[in-house]
Length: 83
Image 1: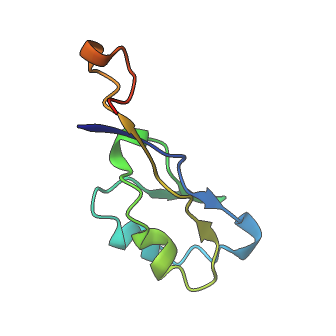
Image 2 (image 1 turned 180 degrees about the vertical axis):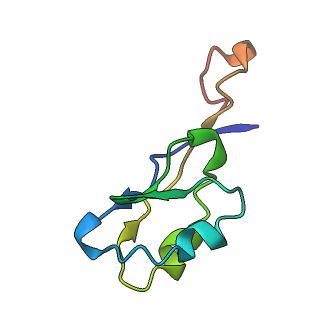
């Protein structure tokens, strides 16, 4: 089992038009808009699917790659990858 770790998407505020498409397309309802644009404030709701980045017409949302690690809660391996 893997524990997933990733950064939340970044927003280039100057490019955001506040169209709200990112909010509509997020499958986990993890985005809301404020005066500065999209806000990703709950890491647990973001699964880094990239839908928000794909739908953004101006390229204001940038997602980063996913890093897969051994299960963070698995103490049997001491957090080490079994190879």
